[in-house]
Length: 209
Image 1 (cartoon, rainbow, N blue to C red):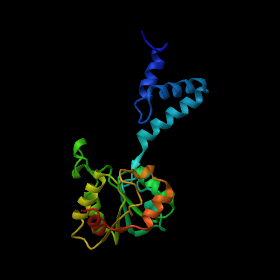
Image 2: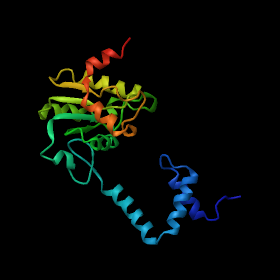
Image 3: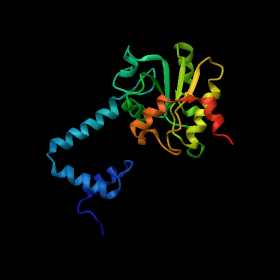
Image 4: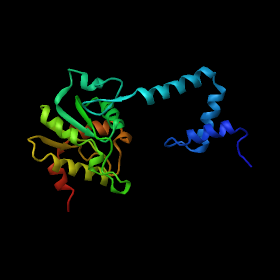
């Protein structure tokens, strides 16, 4: 017997439950909430999602999500163009921006090295990072990656990749708990980790026994 009284409701619940962190119960609650709202509310939500999916772009300079060719951060003349913060994805850009402790530019990798999930260096936005070092006056690169095995592996790969360049490579201070994603770290801890960042080589040395 079907647990839903409507195939249309069931279809909506199934689609909503595909979203990360949304189970069937939460999906049902959201669907029923939308049914109680004015039709305009649901239509506005649908239109916003479709427009986002069709029209959103990626910044040509840093690969951050943007409405225009270059994102607002890269277009801001007040940002420090000599300091580049390398992050996994847009969620990390938002997390760091919320600390108000960083005024440089970003480089979004679009993922981290994870052999189990079939993600290797060639799947990341690394070639463009190298191009930026050739074309921009970058003096420091901050590796703001997750405090996980995958994050550390990605950081070490980037460190070796950028060895030929005369650029200072730092990493977040280990105020971050091991296993943490940046987006789930509170703003104060993340801000302090940025301000107290250390040289990557020294940090890597200290983690070895």
